[in-house]
Amino acid sequence: MSGTVAGAGSSAGSGAAESPFVLAACAEMLFLDLPFEERVRRIDEAGFEVEIWRWWEKDLDALVATGATFGSMSGYIRGELIDPDGADAIVATARESLEAAQVLDVPRLVIHGTGLDDNGLPVRPSAHTTPADWLPALRTLERLAKLGEEYGKVFTLENLNHAVDHPGVPFNRASDTIALIAAVDSPHLRLNLDLYHAQIGEGDLVDLCGRALPYIGEIQVADVPGRCEPGTGEIHYPRVARELDELGYRGVVAMEAFASGDSDLALRRFREAFSIEV
Image 1: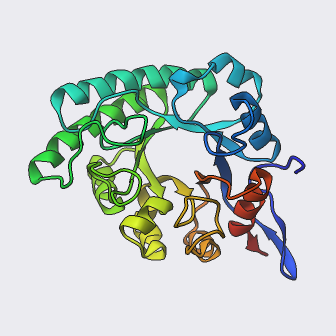
Image 2: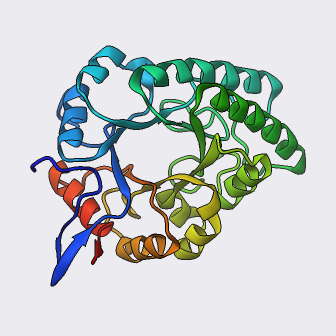
Image 3: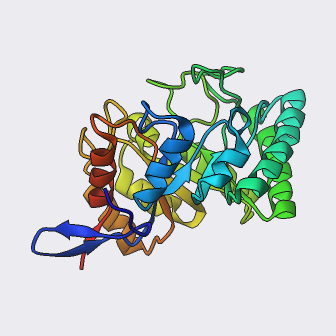
């Protein structure tokens, strides 16, 4: 696939189509047969921003040498929002992440309700958050927002799902993350609206996009079931794309999904799903 600028369009139907969004793709989930830096190059050459997870397991200098534009990465190494010791840990390791983000020139750093282990399971599982959990979570997020302001970066709080990937993660629903982001009310703390997780946990994605719009830092997508590229499952992403376009959203839409087959084809399908006929 030849290189294009991020968000460039493709032919669809009888008219030209192009994406009004900045498109990104996760290097952790595509081109899995290649070394990591080569994955980054392939995504960059295809015209997408690159997203990564655990930056501390990567050679940052080698990533810089690829010349890719990095849009997002993990925003902490360990810790959680509720427990005082965990809160101190997430803030301390968030500062380490911000230093790494300076190296890669990454604008957005992803956080969750609690730390996740190598299998994506929460280090402090909580099937249900209680009223007593909300205030300490809010205070921790306020600390992270101030830290983001210090570095000129944005932390994005991601909604996850209990049923399939991350059982026991607190504040897992998008409605929870929206409430927390709105309460902190800082441009340095925004919502990472993951529509794959939201479809499993809540559904009604078109309405959700409208409710979340004032707080969105970026949007991530994958299809359900399977967590592969748009067009492989039940979500009609072209309809979601039209809604976002009509709402005036012009930010990042990132494919955090596995390829159902060929990774280049998965990227083309993703671009097509988020292109609008003009």
